[in-house]
Image (tube, rainbow, N blue to C red; front, side):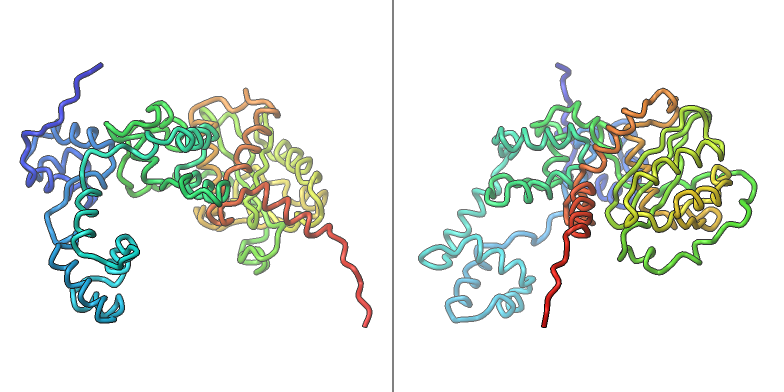
Amino acid sequence: MARVRRYRWLPRSVRVVFWEQVRRGLAAKPAARAAGLSPNTGVRLFRQAGGVIGNAPRRAGPVRLSLAEREEIACLRAAGHGVRAIGRALGRPASTVSRELSRNTGSSGYRASSAQHAAEQRAKRPKVAKLAADAELRDAVRAGLARKWSPRQISARLVLDFPDRPEMRVSHETIYQSLYVQGRGALRRELAAALRTGRALRMPRRQAQARRARSGGRIRDMANISQRPAEAADRAVPGHWEGDLILGKNNTSAIGTLVERQTRFVMLLHLPHGRDAATVAAAMTEAIQTLPPLLVRSLTWDQGTEMAHHKKIALDTGLQIYFCDPHSPWQRGRNENTNGLLRQYFPKGTDLSRHTTDDLARVAAELNGRPRQTLDWHTPAETLARLLSHQQTPRVATTP
């Protein structure tokens, strides 16, 4: 096993300056120079922390309550003051006082000495990582990662799947730290490849680079997105879709993507023989004709020439087709997000024509089985099934 250098000889003040620069958005090497370190040392410090900035030291400050403050809380509480009044007296947020009381109020009330002892015990390090100590919880997290769920999706879904078991709770930040931070590796490091980014190191958020404008001629007789009904924009009514192509190596292969705006349900178009307008129209018509009428209202696409036969698609399916403004991918925000998720399965620079219809069906099923925050952590498949069952439930007529 390779020996890891911990750089304990670096003064805390130097490490604090380095991480403050990283928090401001600098990369590891410029941050190291600002702290008076060599660039290579900065890179090693960053990797040692797994890229998780929250594990980095901060400047000392009055973060934790002192014993004197706890004694004052006990006195004010005994005098009948509320958390807001106590917070004003201490110069602390009311939430800090509320947490302190909820953590340390026992059968005999709040006692400052007991609260101080409990806080000191909680602050002791090192501590056993939660996922390392609970095999069942760790297996549940591993299963979610194996299905390519994000740590945030896993965390929220555990609440739904185990509503009566508070021990089966873990924050998404804890999962990230178990993946990335040395010494907390309760999860196998290889599972980091299951994340959307596929990185083995957590990286700071950087400004996204502008996408290259697509070339191609103007489509005839197209309806602009400004003509799309308001019901499509607010997602109040199902049946409004967004679509696009993801391209493979040298732009010679493609897969069509369709996302329903209300339920986030995904359909993939198999295009093994090219992405010309006729091929796309045939594949889209076949896919749309499998849907119930409730889900066939409109489609929003960009101005790519693969949609030159949009009138034929509309005639064959009854789908109203609208086109985004040039260079405006945010007008198909749901589809853009889905295409980013699909790159986990279909990386850039690969030949997409080698994927079969069964491959696309499997990927679509996996995406539709992911819990989504916008759906209150239910999955698109669950949301669509609930929507269709509600529409099919017969209504009983009532008589006055």
